[in-house]
Image 1 (tube, rainbow, N blue to C red):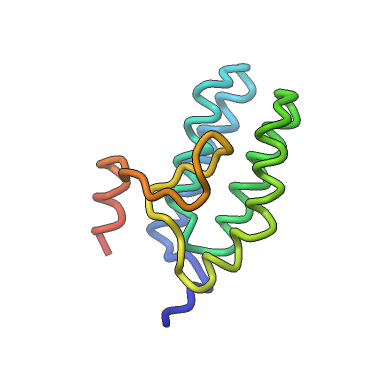
Image 2 (cartoon, rainbow, N blue to C red):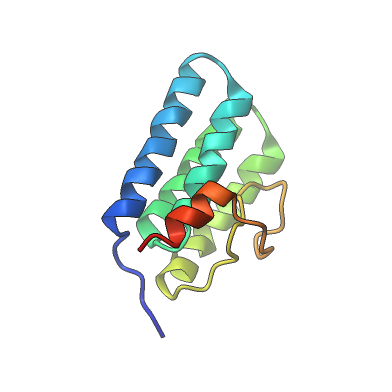
Length: 120
């Protein structure tokens, strides 16, 4: 069993880039694009406990800001179980992390992220 402790630098850079784009969209009250970049950060970081948990933390805060009780509840559940699933590398690849999708559903990975994953 592979344990994922630390995100590789090439993924960390992409993860941080998505979070930066999230912050920019958020400051412009462009909530659709802000959420889009949170989802992408989740896809990139979901195999690593710290990044995975941080994505869900930001999604929880976003849900609170939007007064979206479904999202808030969904993120609380994900925060309780997501990190340990990352640690043992047992995550549904491509899952965007929001409460609008089942937590264990594998989803298509966007092409640019797929290329990034294959660039090791």
